[in-house]
Length: 259
Image (cartoon, rainbow, N blue to C red; front, side, top):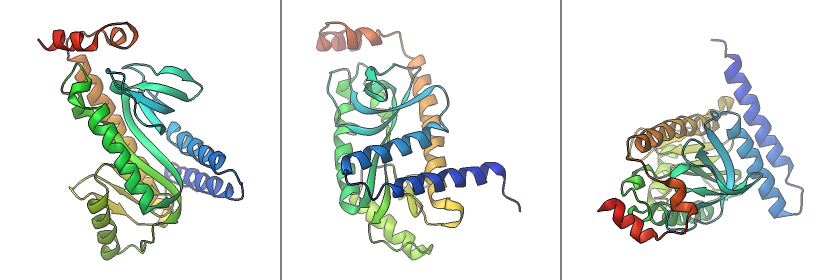
């Protein structure tokens, strides 16, 4: 069966992203290389996001003015709240609006994945704790978390066999509790979908392993954004901007809303 132009074009886009990222290898400034590769991934997602969703980099802030670690890529819903202190693509993002976060690595190692999962522990369970919002059920809408890398330092076997998929899946389940998706561009992806242990994609043809990461994450970002927005619409009116912008006592406001 002939491939559609959309499928072929998406393959070409991903091949271009991977080639551009790897062409930066000879540069000697690792910080610059990392930032350029972050921009490549941000531009990739920007191609497919609907207008209601924005993308940037920076930190997430909750209603108690607690800050997350620096995050490479933040995907947020413009309909809920805008970024604060945003300049170009760098900003401070209110927790209520953030739908997904992505960490970008040049070389993807097992240590990188474990550290990303560990950092997400604070994001998911402190920044998004029930006590950090006037809505004590907002923690049910924590952001989707993922990590992307370009060069393989994981030492997995990537031939598309049940045994290799099982080995990767078992390592992730044992070591990575706080990531929703992992992608080594052009090589493999894992997403926490369909079953508790998630699904590993190793198919190299037409970069199906990387397309799975992009498409499934985009699908779930869209669904999560809609669910979050509908959830907030059904709640009583709350002065969102007052919480962040006015000099008010958080604890007093929290007690009043929940009393």
